[in-house]
Amino acid sequence: MTLTVSFHEVESYDINEDREVVMYMATTSIGSYFATAPIDKDQVKRKKQFKQKVLELMGQGLDPGEIEFED
Image (tube, rainbow, N blue to C red; front, side):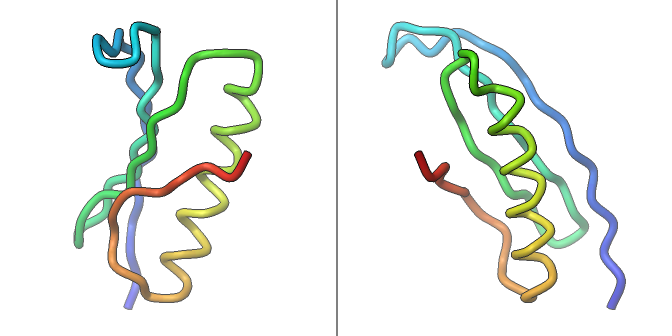
């Protein structure tokens, strides 16, 4: 089965954490993968990690859902 994925990100203010955050999203026909992280100097690194993790999970056939960043 072939899946198509669309990556995008949205920056916003998280009132609960009192800081700016970015939500990374990967949308497929079977659901969305997502992760939220603070906006900081590691933002580019996290974006790459997110994309790699999504592709890995898709390759394993695992269901979409939230992804936790490894710090």
